Amino acid sequence: MIRKFIHLHSLREWLFIFTILAIATVLLPLFNILVPEESVLHVPNYMFALMGKYLCYALVALAIDLIWGYTGILSLGHGVFFSAGGYAMGMYLMRSVGKEGVYKSDLPDFMVFLDWKELPWYWYGFDSFIFTLLVILILPALFAFTFGYFAFKSRIKGVYFAIITQAMTFALMLLFFRNETGFGGNNGLTDFKRILGYSLQEPSTKMSLYIITAIILFLSYILSRYVVQSKLGRVLTAIRDAESRVMFSGYNTVHYKLFIWTLSAFLCGIAGALYVPQVGIINPSEMQPSNSIEMAIWVAVGGRGTLSGALVGAGLVNGAKSWFTVAAPDYWLYFLGTLFIVVTLYFPKGFTGIFARFNSKEKSKEST
Amino acid sequence: MTGVHIKDDSIDTTHGCILYLEEVTVSFDGFKALNDLNLYIDDGELRCIIGPNGAGKTTMMDVITGKTRPDYGTVFFGQNHDLTKMTEYEISHAGIGRKFQKPTVFLNHTVFENLELALHTQKDVWQSLTQSLTGEQRDIIDEDMETIGLKEQKYLRAGLLSHGQKQWLEIGMLLVQDPRLLLIDEPVAGMTHQETEHTAELLKSLAGKHSIVVVEHEMDFIRSIANRVTVLHEGHVLADGKMEDVQNDPKVIEVYLGS
Ligand SMILES: Nc1ncnc2c1ncn2[C@@H]1O[C@H](COP(=O)(O)OP(=O)(O)OP(=O)(O)O)[C@@H](O)[C@H]1O
Ligand SMILES: [Mg+2]
Image (cartoon, rainbow over all chains, first blue to last red; front, side):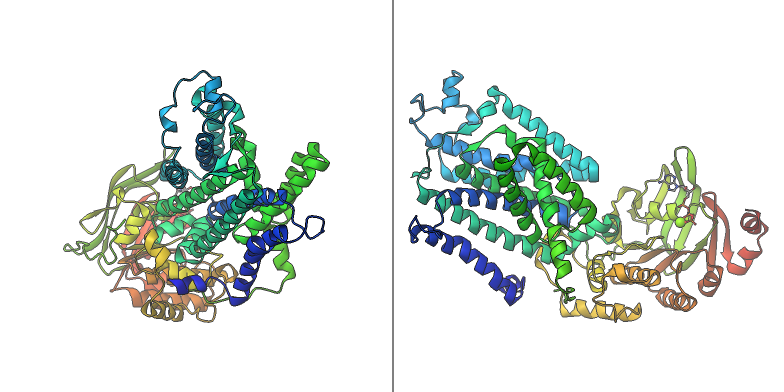
């Protein structure tokens, strides 16, 4: 088993990956702690929350690449799984506020504001971190499984599938906008105080969250790489390229699609859960249809079906977005739209495709 | 998912037949692509099916492999498998393999990987995730590449193969799938004369161990392999018998020359 994991990459690639991991999780924190604040080499505190956020986006892109890049199923509803994980974490953080809210009540502020007298049943259990963790790991996956079961079984594909996922995220957004739904309405969940007893204002907490996110992203990448490099991964790309041939070769493609779809939602839910404490808020706008479209664009820009392309794409697009929202906020959507069109028309393999063109031709290697 | 049979020996052919099509009718928007079609294939037989364009030959294969459901009629594999009630992958597992009219291979996979995916083995999610090829399975694939003459192209992406080579690869994929019944739709389209001869040799060598149904337009090819030929026209059987007899049948001549 361990051998199999080692063989996922060549020695050079492993060195590269571990170097990046070491820089992210050891070097940058050290440059924050050890280098004096006046120095240009000092990594400021706010950087960690920002980078943590980017890493969450990268995890989302990774998840989307599995289902879209490798299996050819375009989802425009991953915002839902992201939000499911995010809201679960948000509920825990709300319960951890205790009586320190504005109204000094045991109930979350927004419930007091709505004049609710007791906690709705579906908020039970979120006092416990273990319970919350289980919800984060199970709920998005379970939801995706159920949704996927019906969609794939009735052979919904391509554009139809994408549209249904858009409808799903839109419907849930509307549901969560309502105050009566019990998740804070359009304000969502915010004003968190602490996680596991550690203050969320503390730079050390933020840095820890960032490091945890980096490690989880690393592990998710390895897991995804293992999946796509296995025979199952080859079945997935085969489904993408010629599904009927796969069926006539004796594969129940519904099971394969369900597996990767559920795995993708699982990773996306974890990303959402990591995102919320670092950003400090979760609200229904995460489920805006355009949000899920943007997630797909990260992958398209980075390059589909490579995993690493997805990570790069999430970084590039969000880097550009951060710059635009400061420099020219009104033009961001125009830029994004143009970028998407240019990439689809001229660089169907995205950024990694351009990069590979400059590199020498890839050598064909024996598959294992 | 564990109920999938690796080797299904339970096909009941005690009456000598492996495939039964009876009164099969398929209509598309009122147009009958198959019209009261009756066809029986013997176990181990090599049968050729000919017929003008639109006769319903491909539709017949769609019905047998579960891609299209008949409006009426029965389709049995052996006496015990009702194909109209099975899904595509179940039919494949029961032992029916198919080559499409338009060669369909995995263009982004290498020749080797194409064969790996087709190989007869457990095909559920968990197996695919955890299992890798055994030495024995590699040998089977190597042997198969020898048979279809693509040994040199082992690591070549299938998308880079010539049309004829793709046809061969698809046939090779059928072979490693090890089916009892092979349905082969226009195998020599786009092949050179030599490749065609080679294909004829191969199919003849397979008969006996497997039952084979070949659809083709290329008459020389048919002549070189066929024992028994069935002529399909407007969705049902027009004539059936030895190649010489069928060729001289006035009904057949009319259909072929009159159009
Ligand atoms: N999905 C479909 N919808 C509507 N009509 C169809 C469909 N599939 C086949 N047909 C029609 O059914 C008839 C039989 O088609 P089929 O493909 O079985 O013919 P064929 O004998 O394989 O011909 P060819 O020699 O050209 O391959 C044709 O008239 C075709 O247009
Ligand atoms: Mg045809």
